[in-house]
Amino acid sequence: MHTIGVISDTHGMLRPEALRALEGSELIVHAGDVGSARVLEELGKVAPVVAVRGNTDTGAWTAALPPFETVEVGGVILYVLHNLAELDIDPAAGGFAAVVYGHSHRPAQESRAGVLYFNPGGAGARRFDLPASVGRLTVQDAKIRGEVVILEEGGS
Image (cartoon, rainbow, N blue to C red; front, side, top):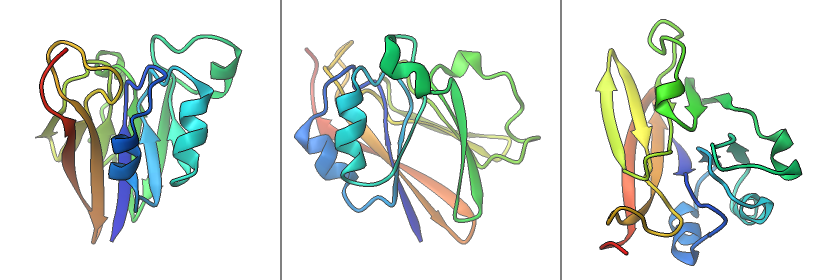
């Protein structure tokens, strides 16, 4: 069994409860709007990190962040990008098990054509009366399952 921690929309804020929720991950995927290189450094103390650039990620430190990334874990391939509206491939035809994205700050998961579309929600400052959250993907026997972990309830 493989556990992948998923986080997005930190906007430079890394909550202690987010770090605790990601403990035990063998890999952490950050789906953009990181906000600060320090966020990636702190996440890297928990597990190796794969991150993509979000629409608010600017500055020299973001040059190493690609707009999308593919990741293979446990026999499945994930496609990671920040804004789902910018998805320009057919994930099912490409053999992807999941599309991981952020941007909306709204946790979501649904299956389309056998592909899991997974948004962990926003882990930074609360926005739009949504709770702060992260996600967890579990891969076992080449099958993927998602879980949203609410860090705190309520809105701003």
